[in-house]
Amino acid sequence: MALAEVDKAPFGWYHVRLVVVTGIGFFTDAYSLFAINLAVIMLGIVYWQDEIHHGVMPHNADTWIKVATSAGAIFGQCIFGYLADFLGRKKMYGIELIIIISTTMAQSLCGESNAVSIVGVLIFYRVVMGIGVGGDYPLSSVITAEFASTKYRGGIVAAVFAMQGLGQLAASLMALVITVAYKKELEPVLSVADCSGSCANAVDRMWRILIAFGGIPGWFALYYRLTIPETPRYTFDVLYDVEKASMDARKYRYGKEGNTVNPVTQAQSRRDMAKYKTPRPTIMEVLRFYSEKRNALKLFGTSMAWFFLDLAFYGLGFSSASLLSTMGFDKRGNLYEELKNTATGQLVLICAGAIPGYWMTVFTVDKLGRKPIQIGGFAILTIIFCVLGFAWQGLTKTHLLVLYVLAQFFFNWGPNATTFISPAEVFPTRVRCSGHGFSAGMGKLGAVIAQVCFAPMIKRGATHENPTPWIHGVMQIFALFMFLGMLVSFLVPESKGMRLEVASGEKEDVYELQFRNGFFRGGGGRAGDSGGSGRSGSGTSDPVGEGGVGTRRARGDSGDTTDVEKSKWWKMG
Image 1 (cartoon, rainbow, N blue to C red):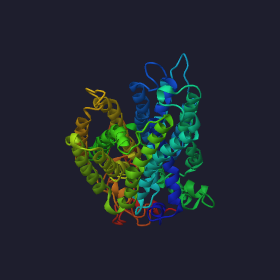
Image 2: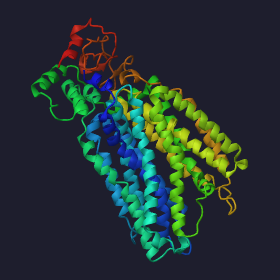
Image 3: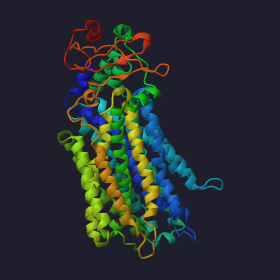
Image 4: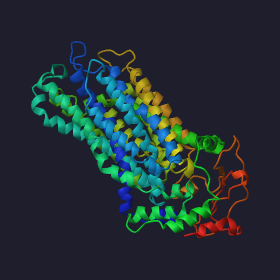
């Protein structure tokens, strides 16, 4: 009853531990992406203090440093996603966090040289860090979903994603703390163009401390990631090790003590399971699975919803400067006030919209469902961006502030959270991480496009009096993206209250487990359920067919025991 123990487990401290361990990566991800927005201001002061730039980083350098992590994440999401299906969740988990920690520390130690510019070194390390960040998306989401109780699964996965809000909050707080710590050196300086000597030395330390702090929380979670047991579903569905799946489920809930596998029983179990076992999922199997119409439509829905979302989610940051001015955080009496007000303003914006939205999802997603929250969020965001786009000229700064806070709230109590949850639930175990990784990769592609294409677009025809003359046109385009996101969301099935086997369609679906000589060969009839399985009534597998090509059949809940020979292996252990 390994999976029944996981699916029906009451909410407990092991769920909290799971959220913290898996959420640390998202904390670090958000911290890094948010901290760099504040760090580039400091980098400009230190490395572009000349008569041309006057302490301000050039736009191209600023853009590519910020985009580098998202670009690297695309590769990390797809590569780690597939490897987690092929090698296992446990074998890959922790590697991505090691990459994030090491590259975060490396960035904080970067410097200018005659051979290499600071921009080039930072971009390199941020691309590599992005690979680790990208790997964290499918791994953390799927591991959490496969360990979580059915009743609370949506909220638990959403809580992992909500760590992004805490990461953004920590970045703003850290920027504020180090600014206050170096007040003595910053206060006498009037502006970024006047910072030199002790001021420049202080700012050089500040950006390094700000970046480096993002890697510290990862050290506390690294041990737990490296020692986390394999998810029982992967052990059961892919490795076909019934005894180890049961032991992993007990280890997850009760700890290591006393939860060990009897080698004799395990050897007997593996010998009996050998005739059912099939190779680990290959790239060809993944491609064949997602090329089938029904599966392709689901993948199109999860990936394109995420793509359209991130186009606008990352693009909305273009208006943050106007919002800080609205709240009175644009005062620049001296350099200390400028940096302090920037950090404080970002802190207020995060607390006003983003964090409440994240946690609203946590508390409502298992009651309202993923699909209503996602479609409703896209619909409301379509209206908000229409107002921003078509009524921009008539909006006051107060109106802009209110709309920005509402947009942040409905992003996070809406598609920003649900696009992370659904791909971890609606695909079968053997290809689940691959599907999630591809969906997340499409999202990051949208983020890259938003920052590379739309950021320059808003400055078309810019003047000193109006530095963003085309921002209303970009907001109109974002409104279209939100509407398209709403439409493709109808392709994503609802998974509220369903076991993963039902939510992923494994109950009805038949898909092949092994690719041989370019052809898939079907198996026989449906295997029944013996009623006493480790699947908790979720069915069985067909034996390996003629020629060694295995087929996993649908897992019925009917309790049919007509084919005793096919189902009696469920009774082992």
